[in-house]
Image (cartoon, rainbow, N blue to C red; front, side, top):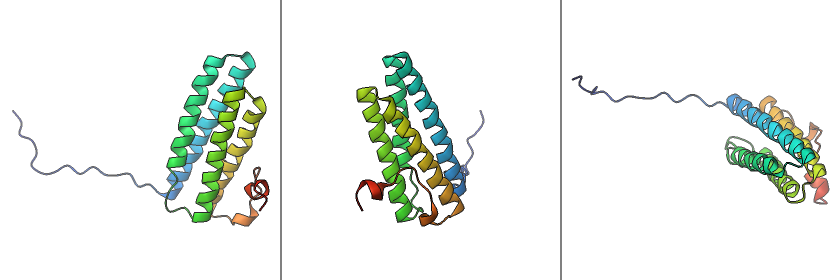
Length: 142
């Protein structure tokens, strides 16, 4: 019978660079867009069971993306991303409660802004030069 190895096994952790994190977030947003399409199709067909499944899955995905915000992100960028993810969850809840296609269309705009934020984070673009679809300062009267 073979003897177990006496030397400890060291597993190599993959390096998680900011570039990889951004790519993973972009991939996650593609998943969000796919679920938004499923929700839209379900609402148009009045298939509320399929809508519920898609809403549950997209909400879990968005919550996961929100929790995975990296600590090396600047505070200002972190706040903007946090607001966008939470606003997306709010619009998804509204869409779910009222079967509202307009709220679902608003989700598309939020996803566009999330993509923009992540690509700017990757490219280290200046915060003030980003043309956003959702302006929280305007919404809050700031």
